[in-house]
Every structure is written in C-alpha cells, then in structure tokens.
Length: 369
Image: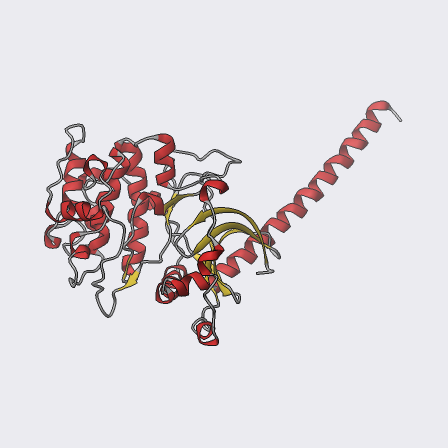
C-alpha cells in the first residue's frame, strides 16, 4: 500500500471502494479498488473476490485490450484486497445518461462498436461477462470507453455456468432460467438491453419504470419488445436480433460470434481497425479538470459497525496467500512510459536552456555591447 499515494474516492461497490491513486516510484496514475476482507467474509463473497482476480489476470495478460479496464497489480493487506487498475476519469455511461440525456443512433453506434471489441476480447478467452450495463462502461479522458468490473465474469472453457447472476433488466432468459447452462450468448442479449437503455433511458423490460425485480424478470422471459417507429430499420433489425429469447436465433450466437454483430447492416461503413485504434471521434468528451462521478458525499462510505463483530482468522488470511500478482507486460510498459517521459523532460529542459542562451546572446548583440 505504501507504494501508492491514494486520492479521492471515485466509486463504491458491494465489498469496498475505488480510489484514484498514484504509483510512488513512476508517478503513473491508476484506480485502486479496495475490497474489505471483513465485509467479504460477512457476505460470504470469498469466491467472488478471488474470481475477479482470476478474470482480471486473464484479460490483462498478453495483448492489451483498449476496451477493458485491465489490472497491473494485485496485493493485499491484513484488512483489504487491492486491485490496481486502469484509471478511467471520464465517468460511466449511466452517469452521462443522467447528465446528457439519451443518445441518438449515431452516438450510440460509437459506444456499441467499442463495447463489441471489448466483449470480443473476453469471448475469445472463453469469458462470459454477465453484467453488461451502462454503469459498467467507463469513459477515459478522451471519451473512449472500457468495460469495467469483472466480479461476475466467468470462465466457460471447461464448464458452462448456470447461475442466475447479473442485473435485472439486462439478464438473458437463459440466465434467469435456473439450472440452464449458457455461455457468451448471455452477453449479446445484455448488449441489446444496454443499447436500448442508451437510446430510451430505460431497459426494454422495465416498462413504466417498475422496480419490481420479479416483474422485470417475468417480462424478460415472456414479453416481445416493441421498438419505436423512430428507430431506423437497421437499428430495429439489430435489436430484434440481439433480444431474441431463442439462443439459436440470437445475433452473435449462430457460430460466428462477434463477427455476426460487426457485419450487421447497422454497422455498415464502420472500419473496425479504426475502431480498435480509437480513431473515431467520441460523441462526448468528458469535461477536463472535473471528476466525472458523483460527489464523495453522495458516494458515501460503509458503516464500520456492520463488520464490528467479524473476526479474520488465520484460515481467512490463508485464502488470499496467492492473491498478489504483477502483470509483467503492463509493469514493463509503465516503466517504459516513465523513462520516455523523463527523457523528453530532460530534452525539453536542455532545449529551453539552449534557447535562453541564444536569446541572451542576441540581446547583447542588439544592444551592441
């Protein structure tokens, strides 16, 4: 923990908080996600916490994906589990929906394209994300997006999951049907729900703003979504394909995965290599110098009284003995960036001195001294 200087809180989840932080030796800015071990024990969340560390290591190793919030370090203290992640200081799409209002088709298409490439990266590693929603799509300072929070992600390479997990209003029918095995198919249904939310401000299965989870689930399992006449025919076709209850008919689930979605007419004219290189101009540039998130007061903090009676035993700590991790490629990039910046700084300083000396000689010459 002493290797980092911790700044203000920027988010909070079920087990802990997220802070901005700076690596002491290189000056690199990161996000630090701290999970409280006592709170994890109280909620019996040990498996979830360890799974998040595994999923983050899978997506962060090898070729870096510019559309997923990746991890560089993981470590723990007697009280906390800490993930050091890419810092995304542009806020999330849920926050920007509340500030900006709904997005039009062109704006939504930009976010959809970048999210598709993030899902593609996971699915190629046999990871199903299981919690796709605007609140989990973070913006960087330039307005490009990354998928965050892999706490519910799952490896389906050896065995397909069957647990009903996720956020109501975004969960696929097969996820809601207890005991039914599924794979990356679930993410494409959630993707359709998320796109609808960006366009209309609510999930397609949350009619009349109901908060009744059972009613939302019932509609997900039975309701045929009626798409507004204001939607283009290409958009209607895309959403109808993604929101198919029958997996075999769902877009992205017919054997070609993300390519089926990328080749849909809605994305006609999109150069996917340019998307990967982040060459398209984002529709929304987060305000510079602002923390694009709720105020620290609104984010709140945990009541320590909740965990006052929870004791951490040696057996509890033993669970986390293999938790520490350094992603070597990302650490090397961090060091290389620091060296590059230092060399540039020294070069700029030398050039500044040279110009100052030349100006002084010029002034002397002009005065005839």
